[in-house]
Image (cartoon, rainbow, N blue to C red; front, side, top):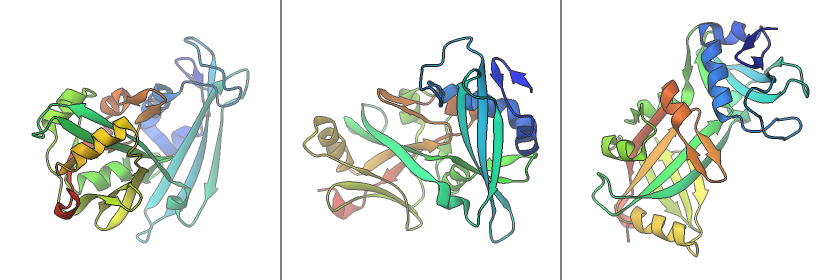
Length: 250
């Protein structure tokens, strides 16, 4: 079995990832904190293993769509592996996860900048197995005016962010549910708690008219915040300023 750094992996992964295999392993390890088997923390230098569950489907144009769901374990807990299953629609296997925060200052013309961050798990890509694969999420957002960000600095992201296309809106539904729509489709939602001081500040910034949306693949959500370094390094981080409809600003 091949080993990259201290991670053992199944050689069949190269059939799907090709020359991007090493980069994929790097992206997985950037977010791996605990063993998926024993749940103990992964230590520096530990002998590790990578198991990947791949779901394969085809779109209407017969393009191959793949999801990659990785698990990192101590090698003593689990041998490396790879499992592939076929499905009619890979979208059925996806879930949207995210977080929100408030940034101060910057280039959006107000004190409080509400941020909505999200990603899809597992990641969905399309292309030919073994060849160049394209992130479905990143591609979709770029097509609607989001911009790639090569920095994990919130200050730089705020200063560089530009308004996205008019196909994107951020709304507040009944009960305090924040919803991001693109082309009329619900892409992501989060529940606000107006009794929470952080959410109250977020809502104040929201009513000013714009939300900074940060998204892409390889975003790492933790109990203490959001880590963007891996996404920025791997070129899968996007950001854009999404408008709030005029009738929802007050």
